[in-house]
Image 1 (cartoon, rainbow, N blue to C red):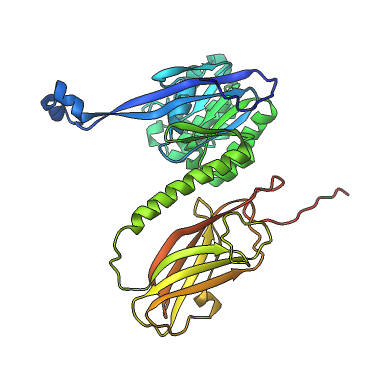
Image 2 (image 1 turned 60 degrees about the vertical axis):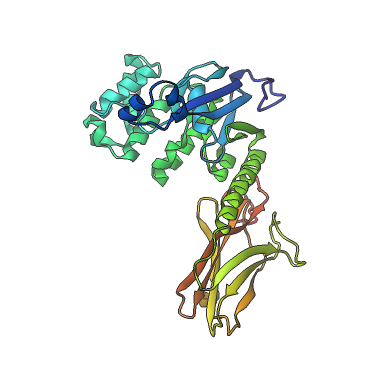
Amino acid sequence: MDVVDIEPGTDHPEIVVVDDVSKHFVIRRDNSLKERVVTFGRQGRVHRQKFDSLKNVSFSIPAGTSIGLMGPNGSGKSTLLKIIGGIIDPSSGSVRRRGRMAALLELGAGFHPDLSGRDNVYLNASILGLSRAETDAQFDSIVAFAEIGDFIDTQVKFYSSGMYVRLAFAVAIHTDPDLLLVDEVLAVGDEAFQRKCMDKIRQFQNEGRTIILVSHSASQVMEVCDRGVVLHNGELVFAGTAAEATKIHREVLEGKRKATADAAAEKPAESESPKILSISLTDERGGHVRTAQPGDDLIVTLRVSHPAAAEKWNTSISIDTPHGQQVFGTGTRRMELPHGAVAPGEHSVSYRLAAPAFAGGQYFINAEVSDAEGSPSDVMWQGASFFVPLEFRQTGTVLTSASVAVD
């Protein structure tokens, strides 16, 4: 199989080449010793199932590139990162790698719980290729970056998850790596530490180092990475620019969400309370909106079913990011405009949003129907979604015009 160059046309040497890599795991259903003895022999094959975590994945990474590795849960991202890091071997295919590598793949990986933080620093550093003299020279800087202070001589089994990841990351970045592998363990740290890690990653980028970052965050990939790889069901579905990768990743997640929603919709309704049947997003002309251009007016329409007549009732809507961060919300109770009397049947409610200033990214629309006092009758999460084209000159969830001047 041909290897896809993730950055075609570059004259930088390849630092990682993933060539036709597959990885299979055997899942056993007879987990206890007793079950395995009973099913020993040919019958035991019935209790084993092969799972394809990766299927013929191929791409190459030039030196100095920052790669975002994306995909839904179970797509094979962490497995691929472990294979690149040499933690596990592929079932078939090969990975070629050059330069010194540092990997932060799992919380506390390589730490011995009964050793102190100090001892684990030296143990981890030696595993990553530093001599004792080199570790001595870097030790104070490692402890300062990890911000664990007096706990450096405490057994790490008493560390919090945040202390674990801070110390592990601090050791990894002080080994002077040419290639840095970072899994989603950075999400364990607090916001200040995450920002500190991102600043260090940017420093590595400026120094021409190569970074492979596993992340579910499209905004993080857009902010940090210049290239992206998208996996789905163990297969490579895209390798190219970060902007296109985040778009493909969004489409994969949307397809998965729709499949889950359709399966849930097939279940018979058990409640006789008002229910939200659908959420739709349209423009001024009534056209369905999947990609919203900045500054366009948007109309959110809820289709609500009332099994009985209602004198007064309420609805509300909210818009949030894929991580659940709400960027807008309103409703009839907040607006002090409750809905009036309606007969049994289906009714439409429309919210008009005048030129919302959403920045580039994926957004989901949620809705709720409630009674006169605001007690919820039904909620629909992520009933509709839309995408705003990415603006490369800014990050965040608010779009605005910015200028800069120097006095």
